[in-house]
Image (tube, rainbow over all chains, first blue to last red; front, top):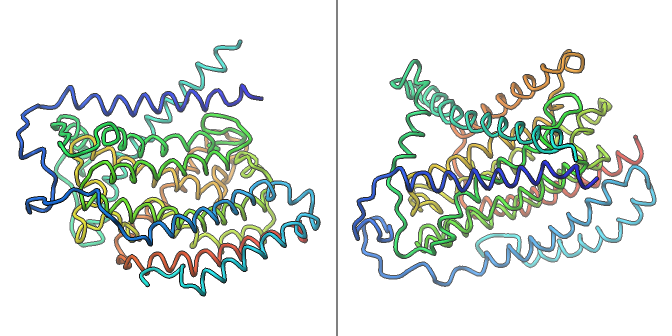
Length: 119
Length: 326
């Protein structure tokens, strides 16, 4: 029943309200004695010479792509896992080719060195 | 429409839950400092009140009355929202965790597993957005590390969750705890627990996997530009996450509210659950005190080349066990 999910909605609203409250409250309670030094980026005392909108290693992007592939696999597995006990051997046979294809891809990535950081 | 049952009772339950969780968070910081003190043969905080019991209160007041600074170079809306975005999901996960016989904390829905997975997915955003919007080199590096680490360890964690789901055969966490399990299933589950715990450590950015905030390389990582209450919110997020993930582990691996007489006497359920959560939290702190931090490449290679194949193998064997033994 959709109405069963109402408490979850209330919880999200209350949680967001709590988050807003703790963000607003200190702004009212705290002192306000700001100066230009306080508003500068923190670089361990060095005068900052560039902001952080810069290029970063492509390795992180690769990890994100690999994550997408495997996460979609995990999402495929959820409904399958829920009905496995009813469909039994049929479900196992149906999932085998999918896992096999994925395994081939996994071995390929491993051999290519994509799973090893820092090369 | 039945207002009392649909709105009033859930609101009361949610407010009580939030208060319990936030008090729990406050005293978890004290417990951690006390235990770490003992691990290092010193006292830990003992000045504020008896045994330092007033310390969390003092910390809270201090954080509340700090000046709010929003530096010039940050991406303002995201910078302000990010701490709340880190904290709130940790509170929301509790909705589906069963606290007594046939009774979840807030909502009796049949999709407990999916709720946990969905909300846990949102959790990463707080840290990533905080680091990105700070526009600081330390923060950016911390956020990049954190995002890569959290998505990587989410895969084996998801695989272990699928395995547990295969054995349970039901999306509902209430049914998962209610239904009796055969003895071999418990042993099979406990085999996976250490690896699941490692995934949880990495997901919650806890030591030894706190590379997003390595103080000797990145000052404070993604939270370098945060101060006052906003910094406190990140602490709250981390510690509430510890409590929440401990509750999830207690529910999935150790029978949640189950214990002697818990089925006849309902109020014993939450007590058993709290006791299990407490033991798991001590485990978190024990690990922090004992294990040193790995290098980042070791962390990632360990996940992709060891944990991921292991969890996929575990999932396949779980499927075979569920089909042929149940």
